[in-house]
Image: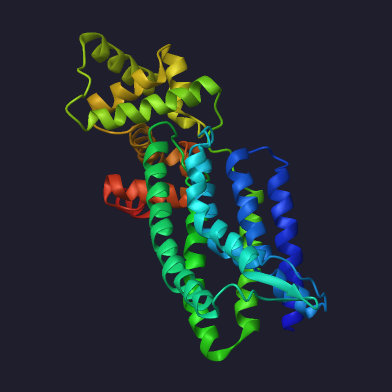
Length: 370
């Protein structure tokens, strides 16, 4: 049974890594390349077991151990390049992989092949090798795990705040599935403790295979996080910087022209109701007003005290309330009304509605039914 699982893990991890790298939808190219490298590391971490079960006597540098020290930084860069696809690579970033590189250098210089087997070189103290491995295993790996995963959570949360400045619907671009992968990896540490005591390789490999399929499924159905032109992507950086300034003493001061623009925005929202489109973005709304996106973002923040996402969804909830109490819409379900007013997710509709009214849509309907 375990041999079958090992073969399935090796085959599926290699196939999923290849599919994500080829990226048939051409979405989030930079992030997907790093994700494919992350999956390939999982393949390398299981290659020794695969070779053992298939009677393949293959003496090589222990790439599966090398990948153990690189897989967490690689996942960190996966998240970074999903969030910042145009980020330029700098040579200093190689320091994130220093322990993996040190292992390769040390392995090459401390071992030699004797009769087809890799053994410790006589020039290297066996006690030093033992202490070095213990240092990597019990200090470096746990430290990497804690530091990088904390940074991963912080980057995803920061991303979720940033996308609310330009997207009215964040479902599918909030990287929630990557956060779930973080939870899965964390849970593996607990299952590994159980494995140490039970030696149940079948259990740990079954969980790994299920996790691989989960990653592959979500990777294939992901949305483009920034479906905008290059100029709009540059403007997003300006908007994020502007948001930081708004929370500091360098905040821009509003002018009379800014307030006139805000009045024009309110008129547009009341008469044209652009919020009914689930695809509404800060950029499409700015085009309708013939202003720059970062200027519109400032206007919304300054006069409504809300970000773009909150501003638009408030109008959607108000429209939903009108539709719920209108008997002409009795043929529509609550979810149908949510979709009609521009939401594209049941959970987001219910959560936003309750946050603004202290009632769920169903509770609101019952309270206002005649």
